[in-house]
Amino acid sequence: MIFAGDFAQLPPVKALSLYSLDAEVSPIIHVKMTIPAQKAGIGKIIWQQVTTVVILKQNMRQTASTADDEKLRIALSNMRFGACTQADLAYLHSRTISSRPGHPSFSEDRFKYVSIITGLNSQKDKINEIGCRKFAEDSGQQLTEFYSNDSLPGNSGSDVRKPRNARNQQVHQLTKTIPKNCQQQLWDAPPCSTDSHMAGKLSLCVGLPVMIRNNDATELCVTKGQDGMAGCGR
Image (tube, rainbow, N blue to C red; front, side, top):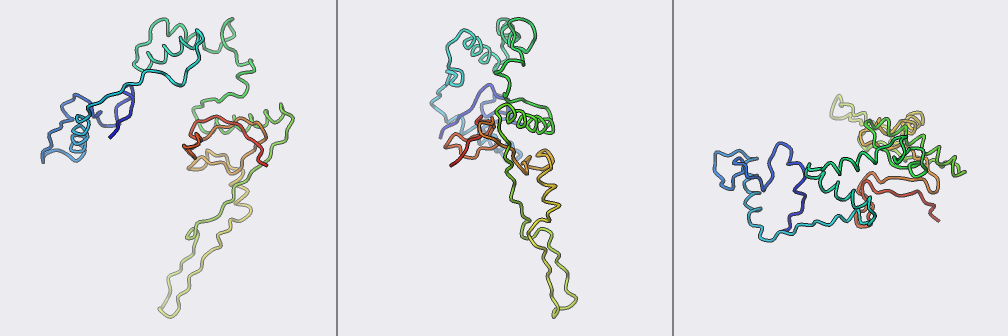
């Protein structure tokens, strides 16, 4: 059995880590314990059977070797444990967007199509909409719309009427096809208006920067948060 994790991560929600020294996580199980406490105790028993520990220290995401890269690696390592030094803070402040000399500026070309973290999904949708049009305009292309192919579930909207007698049983089911006016509303609705935040249509052109939203194919590195660009399949 292999345990993998990060000791700098936050503890489980409303629970304690398996390696916690807190008395509430006891490897001794008795009948008066609650079910969660029993599960935590069993987990700690398994954890205490670990005999080999491998601690990985090399950061594989920041592998460049410039002076700034080294400062970033040190700052990130210290940040994980809440132990940033004054040198770390000074370096991080130097990377803030500002019009002052020596600071990055949003007017630089490298920030033209970068990903932006927003507080609301509605903001993200509007930024994506504007960004798609801007990229197509800058690259001299036309956006191509890709529409969803929607249909109603088998039992959705079915009108099942209770028969008046056993001889007269009639079940009326609506068609699975979505009316055109409803379908158009689904296509025009922003992704934030749906439970799964899925777009009814995608506006794409060749080279447009995109980001993967789900772990669609982890074996091919098509994972959530992965950057990419729209291509042209032939």
